[in-house]
Amino acid sequence: MNYAAPSLDLLATAVLIVDERQFIRYLNPAAENLLGVSAYHALNRSLASAVGDCTELVRVLESALDEGVSFTEHDLTVHLLGQTLTLSATVTPMESAHGTAVLELCAAGGSVRIAREEQVMAQSQASQTLLRQLAHEIRNPLGGIRGAAQLLEAELEESDLKEYTQVIIQETNRLQSLLDRLLAPAKRPVVQPVNMHEVLERVRSLLQAEHPQLDIRRDYDISLPELEGDQEQLIQAVLNIARNAAQALEGVGRIVLRTRVARQVTLAMKRWKLALRIDVIDNGPGIPEDMRDQVFFPLISGREGGSGLGLTMAQTLVQRHEGAIHLDSHPGRTCFSIYLPIRGEGSLAKIDEKTARPSKPTHRAPSTARSTSIAKRRP
Image (cartoon, rainbow, N blue to C red; front, side):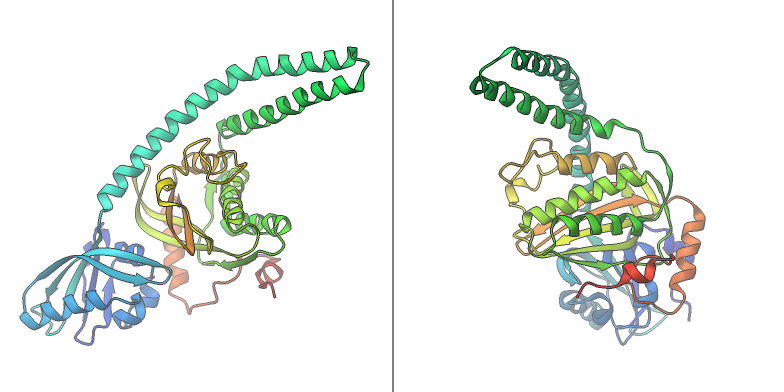
């Protein structure tokens, strides 16, 4: 029996159809994106086994079927793998099929989140422009101070006095490095095909060298196509986020690098059929609630000695690729999700073709000549 029309695939609202056994018989791309599960893995499975702990959703479903009327309820909690969603759900029994119902789901506060993202983007762009202007104004006199200190040091004969000039030179060098970091994101992306799993492997190797005691795990979806982007800038963006996680863990803990496909997403006020989602997840103490709305602002840091530029640069580099970064943090789990648009109709066809095949392990890098070696987990 055909449970859905092709037009449902075009909806931005998540739609599922479940039968009398509460097995999923259809879900559209918006539902895949909202629930974080693909149609290949969800179809013909029970709602609970495919989605997760959805006791409240099942209760609403049973109430609608028992009374034979459409039923709507807000603020339902669904515990998915690794995250918790608050949903609004409308359940409508299908007259043509006894015991079968249509579920319409939407994330509570979705419009508020989009409005907040737009505000954050505007604030970020304004602050970046201001900082770059300040950086240009500071750079010239800073070079003069450094040059004067070097000339003064050459004229001094007493070594004790040279210690003071060294302080001036070292501090001007530090400020120069800070200015260079502020101005670096202004470079336009060099667009070319990019394999994000190779980007993540580069980040993983660098992070492992800096923090040998970190447990860095990989959870890759090997069906993902290549992106159009600047590989070096994407490495820098992911590395800044991963370093932030490692610093929160103080070099000891677990970080998970995960890739998934997202469907029908809005990024930078544009709707995309497909996007690539990169999750950087750590099991650290979490970000304080009063700082969560400010973590991407420049010069804001919750760590002593931090410059407050790492996440700002990451956001700027991702925005240059028309992407966005989302944050979900609570004690014991912090997840930075990078969304990058996938262009081209061919990418959708490739993903659908690969997901129609038998499932393969996802804990490995893409199929390359060295995929076997880099796919091995650490002991």
